[in-house]
Image (cartoon, rainbow, N blue to C red):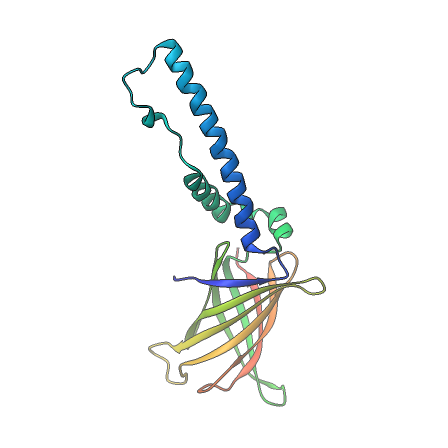
Length: 209
């Protein structure tokens, strides 16, 4: 499932996080270089590995250290609950049950529907996939907002297409906004669709176990 980048509003600047990782990588690389010099001198004193080119013992550079640190941060570190709160970037990845309600212009219930939602997320990319009885949709852009009053708000645009066996759905694009509770176990929000499917309504997500 192809992911796309998402914006973070009200959270820590990603460039600053990358800069901090870069500084740490430089410190670690310098430490490795210092250790390398001491190791070579020790081997020379003891007469060990005299026939081995010194380049073989050369430690990895700052670039490689940065790549390793960034990979570890993206895959594991930012997802730690207290770090996630500090960075104001919630981990929303997982499978969700969606209970939706399409509304008439007078806000009366038009139809109730259910769907499965899968959110795939990394530090800088995300994908929201919704699969329903008659159609499926994939997010094409997204933004995360930290709202001190309401919690985390996920805003995303999506492209929807009908299932092969559906006769009552058209391809269309739409927009959804979801507000997640502090436990990140539930979310409520609204959606609206554009041309070819002028509908709108509400959504409630519950994380699957």
